[in-house]
Image (cartoon, rainbow, N blue to C red; front, side):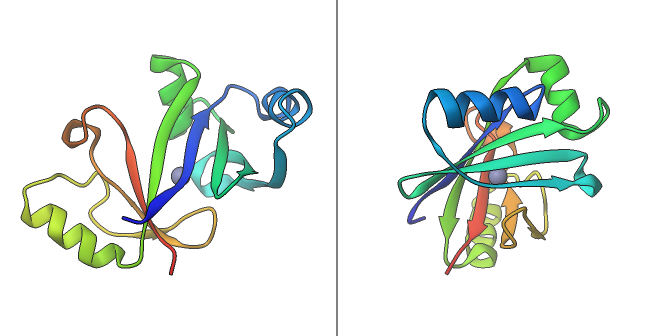
Length: 132
Ligand code: ZN
């Protein structure tokens, strides 16, 4: 693991959250996009080397919709970058650490991602992202 790539924050509605982070805090809005297959609308802010990712649900039965219903708004996950996601997943699995996603998929930024199971990570949903 080389660095924190991004921190994901679950929000009920994207627009007021974007206004707060951009207009009140002065963060640099990098991108807004809709991911209908994941029931998600997201906004990325560049904060130094780290991105802040706001995640808003497109529907209540999406993963983020369910998260908001049980936990409310707040930090949803932290993503750590690695240059070898498959090797890292193999090491973790060999050490008995559960993955929430057994295979990688392509994330919102277009890079391979996978999630560790929060029960294995002291309650934090950890994402691995491969950026070379
Ligand atoms: Zn993420």
